[in-house]
Every structure is written in C-alpha cells, then in structure tokens.
Image (cartoon, rainbow, N blue to C red; front, side, top):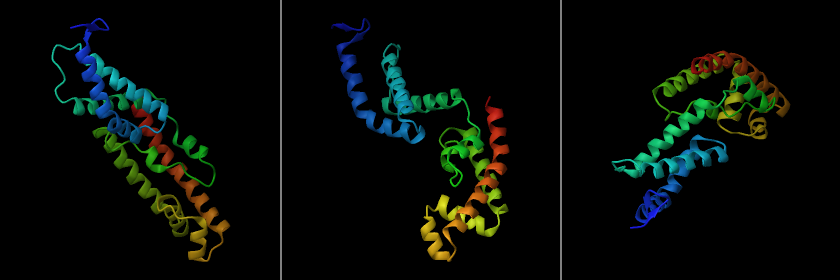
Length: 194
C-alpha cells in the first residue's frame, strides 16, 4: 500500500477525511458556542483536526473518535482562554457604551469548562444577584427588563407610563453600580488565574 506524507497510508487519509466530514458540523457548532470570534473558533477546530491526523502516529488507534474529538476540542478551548490576556470587566462594560452593559452571560466562565469554572460562574452569579438586590427597585426593574428579558425601552415606557429618558437614566445608574460592584470580584478571579 502506498505511503502518503511519509507515514500515512491512503486508507488512513480516507478514514480521516470521512471522520472530519462526519464530525465537522457538530464540532464546529460546539466550538462556536464557546468561542465568540469566528476566526479563533476556526483556528481551534483546525488544531483539533491536526491532533486527529497526529493520532494516527500513535501505536494504539483512537477508539471513539467522536468523543475523542470533543475532548480535544474542550482542551483546546481551555488552552485558548488560558493563554488569552484577560480584559478587565470595567473595560468590557465601558466598550459596550454608556447605556448598555456587555452581555453578562458572555463574561461568565463556561459552565462546561470544568469544576473551577463552574465554581467561578456560580460565585459570579451570586455576586450579580447581590449587586442587583442593592439597586433601588426602579433601577433594578429597568435593568432586568432591558438586559435580561430583552424588552425595548419603548415597550417599557408604554407599560410603565415613564418617559424613555427616565428609563434610560435608571438603567445607566444601574449599570454604573454593577460595573463598580462586580469589578472587584472579577479582578479577584483574574488575579487567581495568572
């Protein structure tokens, strides 16, 4: 049998191509749900497929290729976030503009990223709940309705009888409080990770 690339048989190449074709859509979706930037996600996906090719050099073949690929993808995603320079919560929130807070869920560690990330996620959610509870009722209601429930200011104004400017102002004060209140806990987790 002819050797391709010096060590891989044509049969190995066909097997790898079939596995990539079969697993690629699910794996791409898996990575994209965890990595926001499409180019970074594609790089991770290519690394995973490279690992698959390299696995054919091992004396023992990979048994459950699908499960193995997802495990490698999880590891590559974790490596990606470990290497990535952390951005301060206040910088992320500031970049979203004065009347918007960066998507809170995107700031939280993935629930699938292991026990430490799950612990951090739980702690950050508890801190968010506590910070929201500290807000005056009107600010809290506007923030939750707009940021979490996704309701428009126009809809909120129509339902409450308040002007849009009043609602915008309440949300702005809520965002400022949350930025300040959550920056310390975020920075604490960043310091632990470095």
